Length: 188
Image 1: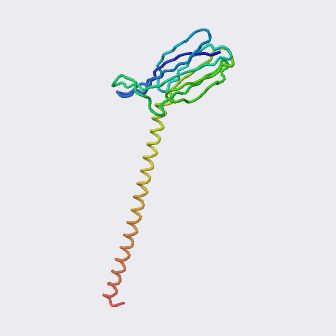
Image 2: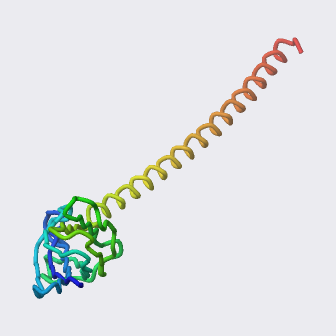
Image 3: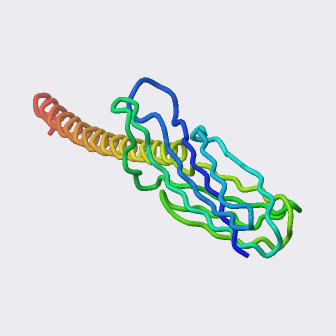
C-alpha cells in the first residue's frame, strides 16, 4: 500500500530589519491509503521543529517531497535556496521508535514504510540558517584568531631581532668606549 501526504511551510529566519527574513519550506507527502491526498501549509521559525501526526496503516509506503526557499523581505519574493540550506526529516512510529532520521538538501524526496499501524509522527525542521551562521561565525572566529596569532608571532620575532641588534650594538659601543678609555690612560 502506498501513502501520500502533502505539506508546505514557511520558516521565519532570524529577526532584524530587512533582507532575507524567511525560509520557505514546501513539503509534500502523499497518502493513497483510500483517504485521498492531504495537504498542509505551515510557517516555522528557523530553529523550530514542526511535526504532524498521521494515521498510517501497516506496511504502507509514504513518499514525501519538499522544497526550501528563502523569503526576501525587501523584494517580497522567494529566492533560490543557497548551498547548505536544507531539511532534517524525522519519522517516529506509534511506539516512539525512529523510522527515519536524515538530513536532506534544499529540495528533495524522502520515503519510508510503516511496519506498525497507527499514528506516525513526521517532523520537519530546517538544518540551515542558525547552524550555517554558527558554522560561518565559527570559521570567521578561527580565521581571525589565526591571523591574530600570526601577527603576534611576527611582532615577537621582529622584537627579538631588534633586541639582539641593540644588544650587539651596545656591546660594540662599550668595547670601543673602554678601549679608548684605556688608550687615553696609557694602560694598553
